[in-house]
Image (cartoon, rainbow, N blue to C red; front, side, top):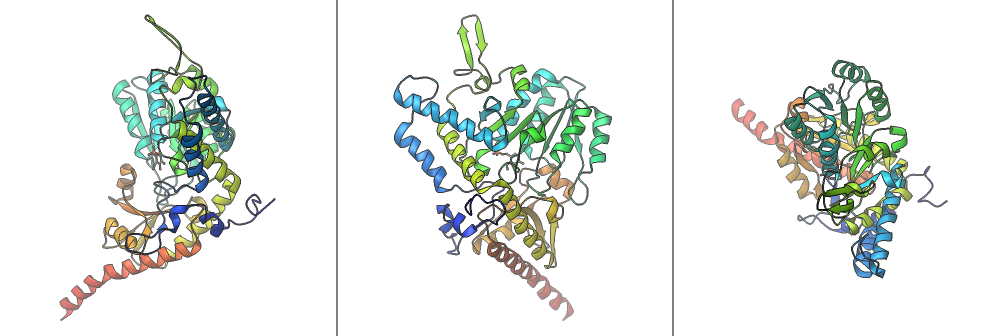
Length: 428
Ligand SMILES: Cc1ncc(COP(=O)(O)O)c(C=O)c1O
């Protein structure tokens, strides 16, 4: 066992950072880059860049189509990629559907499973903490079918009590309960396995948005037992343009295909078509071949480092950030305590727009996101139109967290200055 595979020892961020070429660059101000926008997208290690480049350079061709050397090699790499990704989340390869991302995966479920299972009067249960990707496809389904959507509220700490979940499940008997495993704004880690059990007792099908979970913690779809689990490649050190729709075999098999075209059929005649087997049934057209190979390299990379260690590392960073921000007057942080959240901290600074805060931090080389983070209903619940969000990953260091906290303190003091001048003027 070496320092990379021993899950009991802490991450060697020094070593890890060397794997990510982009982390050695500077921000436009000339300050060293401190990348804290991992909730939006993560950076790629050399091994992912290399795997994709090797495919383009050495064996790129379309998959499942040719019997020539390149096509056979790319098909084999593509299907091996499915296996690596299945291993990351404890699934079977036939349960792994390549999609364009979390958004595309949820839309596929809404169009395929949703259109064939929901009707006027049925209910979909969501939480108010969902990303728009897990709201709008259901709203569109509601427009098509006349079903209704009910939102579970979060409490003051950004959490939802099991009793409330149970109460809503009993009251509404939803056909579908779709929720995020980790809020991309609050960082709240919802108890997936417990909620799936409650949903099962109420007879609901369950979709888990794991976009902010799979990259950061151990996810085993067997333990969760949800019908669908979805995530994006680019948030787990992989490429953009690819994501995963995991579905239980029996559920996927019973679903009609959504997109039609090449690769998803067994036969086509002038009178109709016969759909192929899962997962190809849901992969019409040329799939994201090189992206799948890149995502598999990313899955192996984070898998070798260890998701449990990455999780522990991020929790330590988030605790440090919360402790630091708590010492600054006029900074309001949203979400639960450190032991109930992933590596995400959203906050506002009194008397400063989050965009201005973000711009000030950028001058210090610190990349955070400002805005509603594609969660407008949640921001309405929080009573603010926008927040700043710092989100951590395996390559972030305690020194970076300290630099971030110090910079927020500076920004806060700067925000105070005009009002002090104003009150001095008023006093004179
Ligand atoms: C919780 C959550 N769900 C869904 C998405 C959408 O992912 P994508 O844009 O990769 O489809 C995101 C992206 O920020 C997210 O954080």
